[in-house]
Each structure stands twice: as structure tokens, then as C-alpha cells.
Image (tube, rainbow, N blue to C red; front, side, top):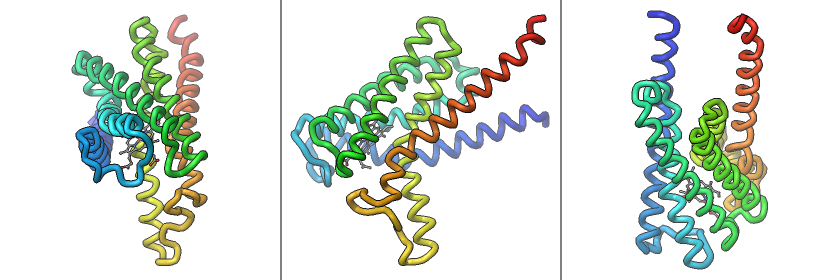
Length: 234
Ligand code: HEM
């Protein structure tokens, strides 16, 4: 087996694993959103505010479920190369659903605030604004034929699309680690009203560090391309 085919196999295995890992949260989001939209009041739980804001949030849960799954699909290089039409169709659905998800979340924050108060409202609103920008830029640049920038914005959209799942994953890992250490440490710095240190850090840690790593990687990639140019074009 050549090195590149081994790498392809590892990346396919990684994507399949990621797909399986996001399924639980995707299902939860789809189900809660659908039940909420159909008028089932039992899924409101701690959510508050006027009916339109609740409907906007339930709609964002349904579209957000698609965003999460399609972010994994769009990452899959083999799908992109073998079925470019499928890549384009799922990319369009991802952009539209991400736009609705961002708008739905922002409507809820504007009308109802959040359970974590002002810090959570600010962090989630910034997340929503970034998602909306990426959902507009990605298809716009593809339509303009600027495929380099389209790819970069597409990757930003994918990172943001996985953010909501990463937010929950961080909590799972935190509780898993602290609770396995001791009963007194279990859930340390995580409070029911999201005022703990871990909660406050996680408000931004589920998307900002990942975006920064992506920007660093894209810059390195561009730097590598620039360094190779004299050899590629003698
Ligand atoms: C990636 C797609 C997204 C998915 C799958 C998703 C899913 C969910 C789900 C299922 C809930 C209810 C809590 C729960 O049952 O865990 C929720 C709450 C919420 N989401 Fe999203 N979401 C996504 C993106 C966004 C974005 C982009 C924003 C920002 C505009 C946002 C803002 C909110 C807000 C404000 C709440 C309510 C927080 C509270 O309890 O006060 N979400 N989301």
C-alpha cells in the first residue's frame, strides 16, 4: 500500500467515525426541533420568551441538524472527487440551512436572551453572525469562480457547522474526566446556570480556537504554495 492510499484510508475512517459521533446530537436536535414546531410544549424545558422566538429556535434546531451532518459530508474528499454534483447539491443545502440556523438563533437571542445571560448571548450571537457570513461567502465565491477563496470559506463554514456539536462534546469530555477522578471533582467549574469557569470558557472555546487553528493552517498552506511557485513556473 502506498503512503497516499494509506492516508486516504485513514481519512475515510476518521470521517466515518466523525459521522457516527455526530449522529446522536443530530438526532436529538432534529427531534426536539420537530416536536417543538409541531406544538409539543414538553420540549420547551428551560427555553423562554414569546412564541415567535421559540418557533425560530425550534426551526434552527431542525436546520442545525442538517448543518451538522452536511458539514461532515462536505469534508469528505472522496465524495467531492467522485461525485462533484452531490458535493455541489449538499453544499447548497448546507449554505441555506446554515443561514436559517444562524438567523433562527439570532432571533431567539434578540427576543428571549439565553439561559446563560449576557456572556452566553454575546458568544452565541457572534457564533451566529460568523455562521451567516460563512454561509453567504461560500456559495457567493463559488458562483464568482473564485474557487480558492470558496474553499477557504467552505472550511470555515464546516468548522462552524460542527461547533454546536463540539460545544456538547467539550461538556461530555469534561464531565467524563472530572467524574472519573472523584465525586467532589465531578462537574467542577460547570454550574446549572452556566456561570462556572468551565462554562464561561466553553462559551467561546467551541468555535474560536478551532477557527484560529484553521486560519493558521490555511496561512501555512498559502505560504507553502508561494514558496513552491518559482519551481512550478520556471
Ligand atoms: C450547528 C448547528 C446548530 C445546532 C445543531 C443547534 C442545536 C441546538 C439545540 C438542540 C438547542 C437546544 C438545547 C439542547 O437541546 O441541547 C440549541 C439551543 C440554542 N442555540 Fe443552537 N444549534 C446550532 C447553531 C446555533 C447557532 C449558529 C446559534 C446562534 C445564532 C445558536 C443559538 C442557540 C441558542 C441561543 C440556544 C438557546 C440557549 C438557551 O438555552 O438559552 N445555535 N441549539
